[in-house]
Amino acid sequence: MSDNRSTLKEFFASIATIKGDLSNITAPPFVLAPQSTVEFPAYWAERPSVFVAAAASDDPAKRALLVLKWFLSALKGQQYAGRNPSDGIKKPLNAFLGELFLAEWNDASGKTQLVSEQVSHHPPVTACCLWNDDAGVKAEGYTCQEITASVSGSVHIRQIGHAILHLDKHNEDYLVPIPDVKVKGILTGTPYPELNGTYYIASSSGFHSKIDFSGRGLFHGKKNSFQASVFRNGDEKSPIYEIEGQWTEKFTIRDVATSKDIESFDTNVNDRTPLSVPAVQDQDPWESRRAWAGVIDALNHSNMQATVDEKSKVEEAQRAMRKREEEQRSEWQPLFFQCEKDDSTFRELARGTGEELHADLTKGVWKSDWKALKESRKPFRGNMTPLG
Image (tube, rainbow, N blue to C red; front, side, top):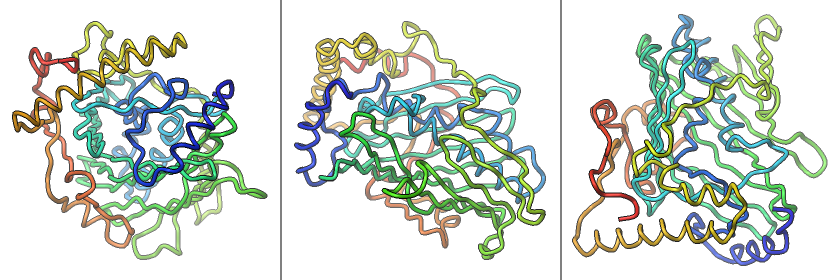
């Protein structure tokens, strides 16, 4: 992007004057990543053994710690989309309505599976379900992004939504937040994300985690820093474990009672398990990498005109599909997720955390349709494809 800095500055100057959500703004092709937003939930499972580790512990405080460790260990992949932080970040493709991403990971913990689906386009909502039957662990959640730009040269991404992690063995639930993001360094050509603010991971076991994110200031601090703790609910000032470091580098876990470091986790160690997806030609037409194949190929070959042409094919077909639905007064039905009005589990766990549901901003609460996840077969929508 540094080679296109003048064009980027012009683009940013134009959107900085727009008030409101920029989620559907068309960005210059050179800032686009060769993957869609519907693929991003996969980064929560790039270390499957860390994802399921809490299920094996009989200590509820330790389980809360292991869930916190999983959350922190996944942030780098989630925010940088698997890119090297020194290369900065790029804007993912806006997922179209009905777009799918299906993947699995196989390691010593068994088979971990993911289904992610774009369940709404206005507003843009992605829902996902991540599970490992062998370990008895399931996480489901959804997010809607509201994007705004500031004249100072940064982009603010408000994440509306949440996830619930469930451990079968302990019949235990965890409310997992989705942090807001501030993208800095855009005009220098190497944009990077910062997470700011305080978030809680609340558990039905009675043990909670608190995460304080902080970034690099003008004169102090390190990029992507945080401090976190695990405590019994109602006793936040007496933590059992503390974690400190950078979610893009290393962080250290300390046992407060013994004042000893019990683990140092390095996010740069290449212990991630490769995800497995079918070859593009074997994917359903609604699966992301097949639907965007022409765009992805053009981006990987730095062919900007082909990127624009291929992207337009998908977007124009989708606009035509929405127009037909409007004329026929039909309503789009997601394949793997259902919309509910409320979430009693969220409300129970969210007490005292400051988390709010905002179901009115996400067209409701999105829950997985377990029967459809287990039984649906390709082709998922018969002869209908994203291109018509």
